[in-house]
Image (cartoon, rainbow, N blue to C red; front, side, top):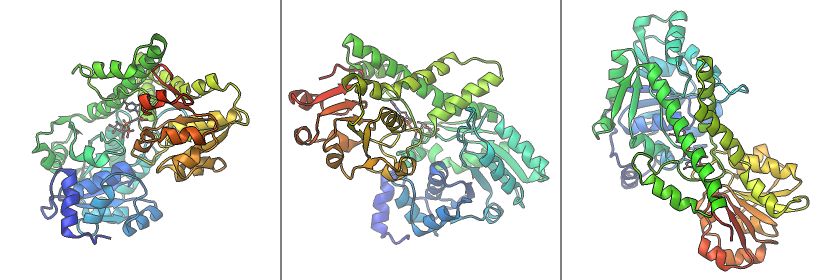
Amino acid sequence: MGNYSTSLLTVLLTLTGIGIFAGDTQHTIAVIGTGYVGLVTGTCFAHLGNNVICVDIDQQKINDLKKGIVGMYEPELKELIYAYYEKNLWFTTDTAEAISKADLVFIAVDTPMSDDGTAYMGYLQSALTSISKSIRKKVVICIKSTVPIGTTAYAQQLLKDSGVDSDLFDVAMNPEFLREGTAVYDFLHPDRIVIGSYSQHAADTLQKVYQPLIDKEIPCIVVDPETAETIKYASNSLLAIKISFINEIANLCEKTGACICSVAHAMGLDKRIGPYCLKHGPGFGGSCFPKDCSALLHIANTYGVTLNTLGGCMKTNEQQRLVPIKKLLSHIPDLRNKTIAVLGLAFKAGTNDIRNSCALTAIEQLRIHGAHVKAYDPVAIEPMKKIFPDIEYGTSIASTLADCDAALILTEWQEFKEVEMLAIERIMKHPLFIDACNILDEKTCCSLRAVVIDKIGKKSC
Ligand code: UGA
């Protein structure tokens, strides 16, 4: 690992658009948790010139990272890890050693959804417990994980109650706004940096570590921790609300004959609305929007506040995830003995993450209706095999579609856009596409009489 030539390294780093900072070391940072947030955060802070030690309790993951095996599919991440590993980026399972060296610690562990819809805090608690046992010199502890409002204050209390001298630590919250699939780019080109802390020292330390980005005129907002925690939940919730709204308008367009793409495009040109999260589809998924919307609803509930718009957004999303199946059933009412292709298993294009993906709902429904499922994704087949080991998986679009009665397109992968319709017409038993992402080229599709395309938010052809 780390054998890249200087010229290749320069090319790779130019991709990030932020230049090479290594050598201008500012801080020693420990990052607890090497999921996509922790690993991207640690690697990008190494890129900004810091010494970074990434920690995980999963020995296998750390062994893999040391060998250059990066479990997740995240553009540019592997190249940056290769560039900095063992220069100013290290991986370990030893929390105590990492904390003893660091002056800044980011906690980036998962806060997944519990069965009751609240955020599960067990990983954060154990991270705090192991940190508390390892603090020997002054350190800033910064929470990156998305956490319920009040957690940063709770973390401060927990460390104190564990007997850590309060002069030795300050606590802060610094939410992340990284999209999977563009996380490295998003880290290095954020719309804003949010720092929440009651400690001036913690806020100053964090501002310093983000200085290369602040120098590029990225706004840095320093607030109290409760405000920072709320900014994160409210941001994800509003983006999810936008998606549910445009999905409802798409469903209306289908009835009225309007074109959702033009509607969304024109709406997005209004600066007060903006173009982002206005793409209709089979509902939002992933590890963030569903859990964060649910957590914020629960948090508001505990304060006796009703978030009607957010509740409606989640209900709409549940219904939207069933739209592809409903459409399929409207064409083929009895799915028994039918073979249905599911194209797109990742929760969105650009990642191999299948958490809360629409394909999970679709495959489950197809099996309930007695269909034989053939699934395909350019990068997410292996994780799906762990959940559905007994369905059939294709090795290419063509092999998946062969002899199918219909296909559902659930993820907006580029290669699905390039489907060769003329060839498809010949290999499928019945060339029926439920194009939930609206990616098949309409002109080509409509010119082929045998192919039926049913899109969300548009008239079928
Ligand atoms: C989301 C936020 O966008 C990040 O800012 C945030 O940091 C992250 O959650 C997090 O909390 O960690 P991510 O889950 O990676 O990032 O994915 P998005 O690109 O936001 O998409 C989420 C879901 O919404 C996907 O299922 C996607 O297909 C869907 N979506 C997105 C739409 O249906 N329409 C859109 O216009 C945009």
